[in-house]
Length: 136
Image (cartoon, rainbow, N blue to C red; front, side, top):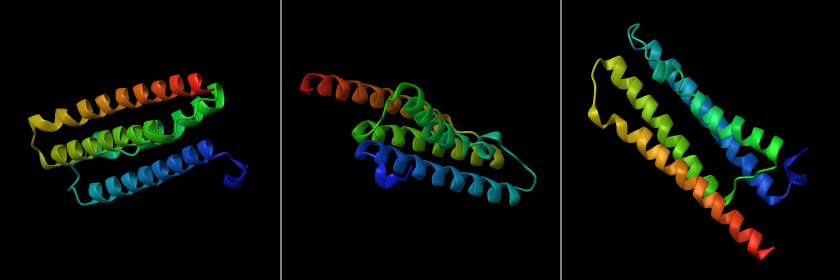
């Protein structure tokens, strides 16, 4: 199956998943390089930051597509991508703080904002489904 044979909604989902895959690769590469120069101080937040875009941006959307036929596109996909990036950047920042040996109270903002964005993406998706059911 090539991208040229897919409808626009599936193509948008594949392109978003490819972007998340590239982002996961970049996070893994960044974490590896950062760990090399961290003087043997490690943080699991930094090491596994690549897993967030890989799981939430690639694996889960394709499992949903495969088993339920659900396609997340449009504004819902954009907000979902923002949630994934926010959580990933928060993990990298937490990893940097752990390696540096300090803490910050504001680190709770990242998972909180990410959760809000995730719920917003689900709400947008549901509203889009309701709107398409009424139109069709």
